[in-house]
Length: 349
Image (cartoon, rainbow, N blue to C red; front, top):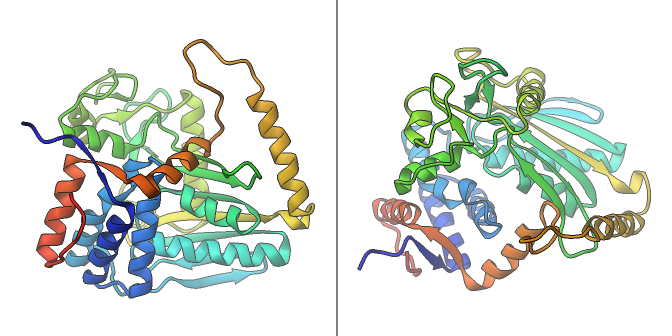
């Protein structure tokens, strides 16, 4: 019998395994535990493209020295409600969380704060950091640069990054409004996942090197294709805006071959709600807004109206108890990484 593509894996045990992998790779206990929590957070919410599938890759990069296991994020510029953090080319998640902690603290003082991050690396699901601000009674914003895989509108060559952005705001409805999106129709990692599973992609997602729609993941990943921008030229414009904030303003790398020693750039922002109105008043107003949206009539064949973050919160509640569905490539990669590190684990992969 063929092995099942997906298998539910205990969320707590999975987090322990990922934590152990990072601890073995040289991170501190605190940072390793954070990485275990942060990556499983994405999978619990259904964002598998940015979840534990990345752990073996990060661990290999730490082992090779491509990522700096001894990095300590630090503030290099600080003025009033702004700051810039240097990630020292470590695991990107750690520096972005550090930066959002600073943004939240400054927002409580000034009402609004913005922190840029430079010299960093891939930081996973940006929804995590916007959620971090919302949990602290703020409206959160986070954005990062991604791989350059989108062509400028009317062009054929890769110039615009897969630059995800997230906004989050608290509600009283049991979920946080949390919009997490890339300027492309799908995240680049979803193309990689299709390749790993031997599956075609939707021809709406990508173009080959000559600008023709393609269902072949390799046409994008190895033969110079590009990802389709969401909303046409509007998605391209959104990606460029993120490049300006995350790279040009924050001092991160941008453009092929540009400033190779600067590393990736990110930006986070927090707006303290209490500087505008009591938090309880804000969440009450948010609840009425949510009710208004969800009072819409529903199209045939659709089971309801949902806001960004609502379905993810529901998945998180279920998967935290019943397990996280992981595909064969992810389970295999985790097993091999654990075997290489000599780590025993008590979950079935």
